[in-house]
Length: 463
Image 1 (cartoon, rainbow, N blue to C red):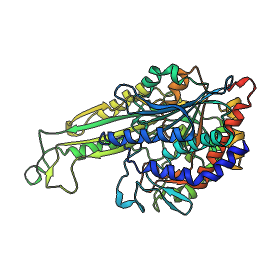
Image 2 (spheres, helix red, strand yellow):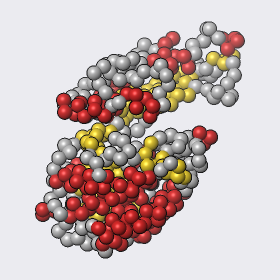
Image 3 (cartoon, rainbow, N blue to C red):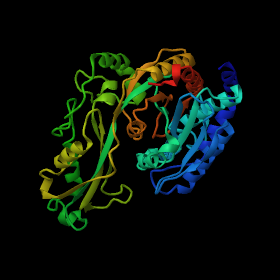
């Protein structure tokens, strides 16, 4: 694959310009207000696919779903077919005053490329396209067959993805899935993710009266909905033990001694505190005997991700009659999402303060957890490819995030292996999201090596 690698080396500046063009589009999927931008983003991805050399490029659709960009190259008879997955939708920028450079303008600082979506996941989109272009323009061909799908609603839980794959199953069927939407353990060290946490969330609404009342007239007499809500949410406090929801840990798969040793070796608390910006005197909330990476990949978690009672800017002297919050739970193998939701709902509704009305409703369909055994021909090919691209041994890693399509689509494709490869950066979903430029280049080189290694598998067997 030397000619492909040489092409890649010569065209990194062009690929950076492609990324800059893509991150200019504020393809935010979380608020429903950016449909035109999402369409524009999908169309640009299709243009980049054509530029890379893919065939039969176009936008695929399913009812109510945001657009999926699709392209393929199927001219390697007898070789495995790889489905490349990434997504072109992004999170909102958050407080723009906290960005050092504009969120929709790719900006280089100290070897990092800053912009919303630079790493999650437009950097992954361009990395896959860069490796494909290197093979198709440098070598003139791919050693395997490729189908590439770029989703437009991953940031809202891929709620239509399984239906889309079922609708287009014959069109998308593949032997192997490759995703570039997880993380590396650290800059310069490649990782293969073999587990993902699942996700469920609920809306908690508290009501105490028909409307707010003047605090001078009713303060101290009327039930305060904001205080009642916070009293309810305070039940979730776990100190450094387990989350106190009854039966929350039912079915949780134990971590093996080998996994625990790897997690512990990666968890330097001082380094993690600095990386996370933890304030002095604030301790990490990890369970005794656990470690950061064990806690964030193989232990369930609960988080209050939003809370609302009144506006700080429009605050007045009132006793508030309603308040609400969103409670999110990350799930691990082998938790039952429906059971977790039932126990969470009962826990939050039990014995409400002052007898306030409490309503707990499920927000979206649960995102399933996923775990695999990172062994077999495809995983060995990936390890060799990453070591060739990075010059460092691969670290197998569990990921605390969720990618909803991996488990159901792998099952839909008859147990197809899924390779989740890391892309280095930080501050995903936060201001100043960045992509580590050198590692981004190494990921593209690794993908070129991966295509070559997969093409060398005896009989094209990936599992």
